Amino acid sequence: MKKYSVPLVMLALFEGIAVTLWLTKDNIFYLFNFSYIGLSLSLGIFLFAVKYKYARRVAQLLVGGYMLIYLGLIKGENMQIEGFWYYLFTGVFEAATIHYAVAKIFGPLIFGRGWCGYACWTAMILDLLPYKRPRGPRKNIGWIRYVTFLSSLVFVAALFLAHVDNMERVMFRAFIIGNALYYIVGTALAFAFKDNRAFCKYICPVTVFLKPMSYFALLRIKRDESKCVSCGKCRAVCPMEVDMTDSSRKRKNGTECILCFECVKNCPKGAL
Ligand code: SF4
Ligand code: SF4
Ligand code: SF4
Image (cartoon, rainbow, N blue to C red; front, side, top):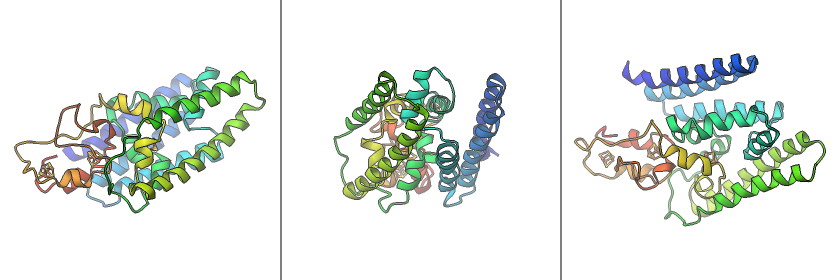
């Protein structure tokens, strides 16, 4: 029963959010939205528990596809970081602001960067590329994330200052163009650096929120020293170059862990 506790906790957590938002915002959409996301994530974690090879992919496609196609393209909500700034500036605590609060700002205090492993629609595509494990040394260009973060903020602030007409339409177009750019740049970087997750490591503006918050995450990979034989297999398979053999919060690249459990699956001693 113990191995099923994580999907059950995840389901309960999202149901709590779903019901709270439904009742406080008096909008049944939130009940369906967060129930669907919670069920999808719990299904992915459950499939992992029963050792289904593509468990994480199932959750990624169910959640990422839903958010990109239904919320983004059909309902026309900008769920990118520009959308977050937009709704924040308009003072509306809805859509992208709620999404960011749950998945990327406060949620990571509990589930770290689970968003990046199980739900992001950008990584959903990047993870299909051939370089699942980085083939070169990590680059020292993580500062780019701060440039993209500030650019998104300046872009939306400029729209407000210029009193642009029909902001909703502009934001929808920004969502389409922004996503296309993410996919193009992310794919090009993956091939250039031979690393599917290069975009996540160096460019993605959302990591400016995700990294500091996930430092305090409740759910973390830890090593049982009494079982470990220091074979190094876990570090060799990690897509994010985390040193999971160090259980401290200050471990190397600790805020990069996307909880993909590749290290856990590959540890011959069950030490993680
Ligand atoms: S780092 Fe950014 S692009 Fe990568 S998975 Fe996380 S949110 Fe998505
Ligand atoms: S392999 Fe392990 S340490 Fe690396 S990102 Fe996945 S879960 Fe985290
Ligand atoms: S794979 Fe397991 S046994 Fe090997 S170093 Fe990692 S934690 Fe230790």
